Image (cartoon, rainbow, N blue to C red; front, side, top):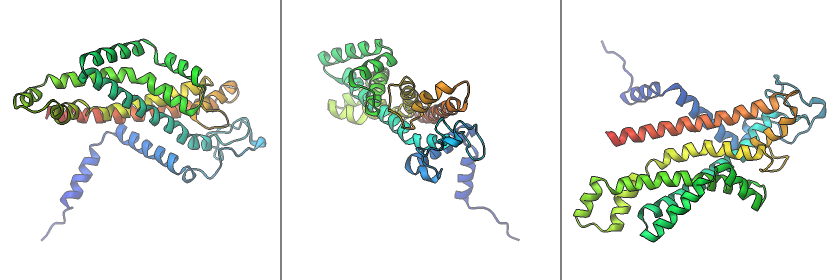
Length: 286
């Protein structure tokens, strides 16, 4: 008598999926939903974000309008879905700019010749002394409010903190045993940097980038809420908050629901980033 058993590979995949924490699973599913909203928002809603229906103005959430409607009768769910493209583009762009600038500054501060390293250190300290929001407001006051300015302001505002972290990682890698062994074997300075220091020091950047996306979206939404972001009728989430705050006592959903979406995105990015960071640390210990 033979016994039917499942394929080993299939069992392994199933067991791995069963061990995924439920919080991480929700975060990944939400991230996939956001990607769909960015790439093909029409797959999630059949309405247009600019469709006006004054007869349906300021309706609370219902089956016809899951997130309610705004003062012009526009469907808030549709505007949130279409606004994902603007919000995530700004957030990812600002995160990429901030981490990229931090990589350059941190690497020069740790690996550059002494005069260059001293200048970079002083520059990072000056930038770090300014609160990120104040620095962003200063840049927007100079360049004017726009999506590009938001990316620039948030990216530059978050770069100093990441630059200090990258500098510390590189300095720690420079003092490690494998770098000393490579130096004793006569390897060139550039080969040691390329083959040993940078791969080990910059490995946490993947987790840092994921965490930075959530932070950048929150900062960009804060600037839009202050009227310093993209102009109406854009459906960027911070702009939705700005438009809905004057109706906070009569139409709570106009500010509560976009706010909850921003919080959910930040939590999802943080959850995924923390998981990546934990896996990287576990790999370093093993």
